Length: 506
Image 1 (cartoon, one colour):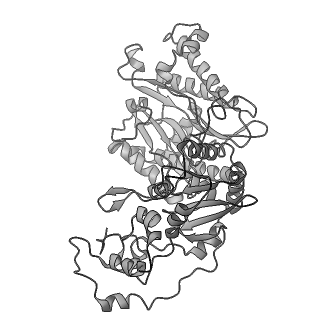
Image 2 (image 1 turned 135 degrees about the vertical axis):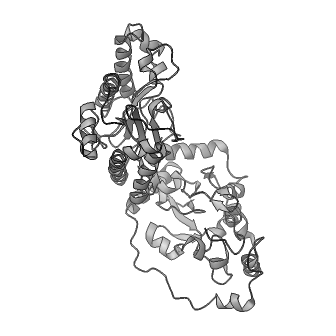
């Protein structure tokens, strides 16, 4: 990474909370800040001649042929629904700021889910403001304009155009997002002067929250967050299409992994992680969450993301991974694969029990069904098998009433899916877990059985075996659709699929 010439002249906090308070001397101050040298920089300063040279001689690069983003109609409809829910109130939804990883390097930025859902924009320091009007709201998107050439920010600042890339101009952004766009550096002062009720989505922008600290309440802000979470329970046409894209890329990522299992055996679980990550970065924005590449006993750790263990022939690989699209929608799929391509008799018995449980769970995903029904259906099958194998004493109803199967099933059988891997997390219990399934909802169905390596209550041969099968299920008008059906699930189909990918006869 190249060494920057100067300190970053604008932190997210100063952009959003302080810059708007500057007076007529702001231009001179900005120029002085831009040319300030960092400690241990190789250049002693910027000469007047160089500074003047850098201001001119640049071609006009304004983009005049931009088309609106694909979801512009959907984001407008989402803002309209938000406006209808909170009439007469100013609503403030920030994208968030860069976060420091180490010294002067930042983590890759991912805009807040609420902001992305309402705008489609993904840039740092952005803020969506809905100003109340006589009828509804006027939406304005506040963004940083292109980095300044007059004060040298475009080449001297660590966040300038020549360091991190070109930002869209405010006019370009208006074309892209279908919303009036203004300079975010003016927003803090406007918010400080604002009157009337205000709500803000908290946790993303300290500067914005500081500007509003005497105008908002935690209770009112939480109501806004909850509404935006519940609004995502039912996906629109665009969202369903993006989730299918995410799943399709994920299927290809799983195929990539199967083809290189021999290389993973020669290295570690990280070869699997890196292989899947390559697919995610080539076809999408990133992985939707830390990939779980759990071989052998690591499969019994539900969120094993260290991925530093050995990959051994004869063990199982529990691969739980999802590609995130460029619009932030993520898949969440799990398969438990025999590393050498063949399940042992005991592995197959355990895997098939999980498969049967998942089949029961998927069948229970129906419009009008209770959300809890698919979980109950899957858990019943697993409890029946545990009793049948002599690991639990029946009857099954007693086992389920006391939750005794949870020693080996551990987790819930699924969750909502969307912009977050565990989507709609702030929704009220009565609309989510105690709610009813509707067409357009997308959820995972993912039962599992996990026999810990140190569990003395099970026969020794069970210990260290973990199995989970997870698919992404869309609730339809007449039932459900398995978006991830492109990956085989039945044990014999898994073996045949692996053999075909690896060019073996099985």
